[in-house]
Length: 311
Ligand code: NAD
Ligand code: UDP
Image 1 (cartoon, helix red, strand yellow):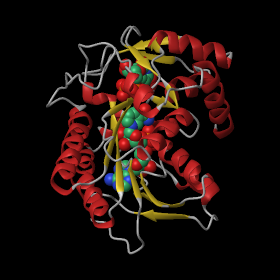
Image 2 (cartoon, protein in one colour; image 1 turned 135 degrees about the vertical axis):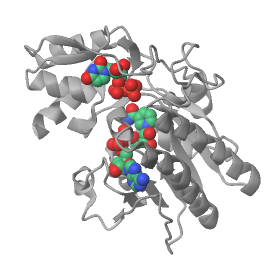
Image 3 (tube, helix red, strand yellow; image 1 turned 90 degrees about the vertical axis):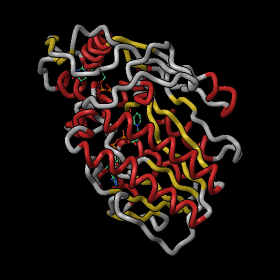
Image 4 (cartoon, protein in one colour; image 1 turned 60 degrees about the vertical axis):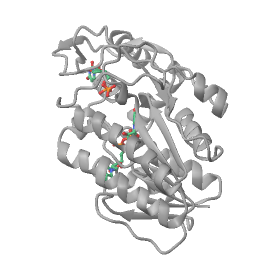
């Protein structure tokens, strides 16, 4: 197949491109390099089945070659990045998403949207099932991302109902692994960088807030299973690892795994920071036959090795 991956030069997108190329597909990676980098796909540069196109999905995109599938991952994912230009984040999730839906319609391609656990906001239901409608601030600093992604899900279903587009929506929970950007401000990249540099580990708030971390290879497997599921399977489906940890536990684990002398430093909790997050993955298990396989310790070890090499 010829497969378009928007955001393909980013953290998750580059692993997805690797996997699709390994499976023998032709991959067109479309990325504006806002948070991604060509280094992430340098290993594919000379592969005749791989093509990189620098492009912002907010601008219309045309291509003559027939496209079979579109994975729409183009959107900055870390709070630091998506809040640095919130208007552009909104544009990527609205105008950009519509451009990709239009492209899918023109080519008769299936399209998968990388939605997020952030659509649940600061959840009052725990763990989060797909039926839960969320507790999201409409006007807060995270809203450009949370509400943007909610809008994207809405317009996906509108295209499906109006035009019969084959849509696939996955709600991705916190994912980590090699190639995360050092400067993205996310907890795993911050903690590993700080631990390796023997700098203070910055915990926001008292560290009792929770997240559930999924290794990137597991996540990519879920994306591919969802994309290749039967047409009537639209999602939204949660993809994540239900192993819930507090940020204090994560800091202690990373200090131990890196054998670091770093000390913990407490800082102010960002506005609207969700208190708890854990996916209910019953749907992914029964509908896709997917569940994560990589243990947190093993995944962190691989991520630490990658950070050590790059640092
Ligand atoms: P990332 O920031 O590493 O990757 C995003 C990629 O999209 C980057 O290469 C960036 O340059 C590109 N991009 C951003 N805006 C663009 C635009 N307007 N046009 C073209 N390219 C653009 O983030 P990631 O962690 O790889 O996330 C990928 C996708 O998965 C995002 O849509 C994100 O919302 C979603 N997601 C990620 C997580 C996670 O924990 N990593 C969790 C939930 C959802
Ligand atoms: N966090 C932290 N220290 C950091 C970076 C993040 O304690 O240096 C916290 C953050 O406040 C949040 C959690 O870790 O509660 C996960 O943050 P991240 O930005 O990785 O993901 P998200 O909040 O989008 O789930």
